[in-house]
Amino acid sequence: MEIKKIENLSNEDWLQLGSFGYKSTQKYELTKKETQASFSMHLTLINLDDIYEKEELNSTDDLERYEEIIQLGYSYGIYIDGKIIALAISEPQTWNNTLMIWHLQVNEKYIRKGYGRLLINKVNEIAQERGFRAITLETQNTNVPAIHFYMQCGYQIEGIDVSLYSNNHSQKEEIALYMRKKI
Image 1: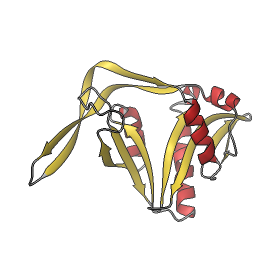
Image 2 (image 1 turned 90 degrees about the vertical axis):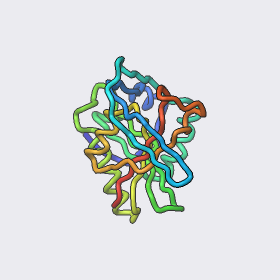
Image 3 (image 1 turned 180 degrees about the horizontal axis):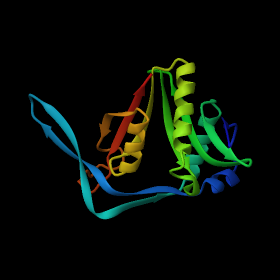
């Protein structure tokens, strides 16, 4: 097993990583209250009647964007026998001196074996070495396994975007949660 900076990713590498997605039996439900005198948002962990399942594939646009980000030198992969099994694609945000993790993916055969934590630790280490003040990432309120994983890695929810994915916010729609670890 080797963790190393990603120089580029071939189509074969992306195929090796496989599809990504998640299943959850819970979600963080958002309640909002807004008056002229105050504004509040509250997230409550609730159990779902049915399993929430999301399966995704990287689009061509995603892959092109990730390739640009990889060239910046902040993206790392885990390799076993020369094949990539996990990656973290990160981009510096110079305007606020943070490092943004755009994509974290572990091949499904290697999930829950510590590889995601190894990558997060590597990104944290690089961010600290390069003098960033924080690391930011985005996930969905329905991806409770990821939220809890990031919390265990020292990240906290610091932002909510109710219309990142849709203008038709309802309790069934996903909302974006921004999580951050201060260095």
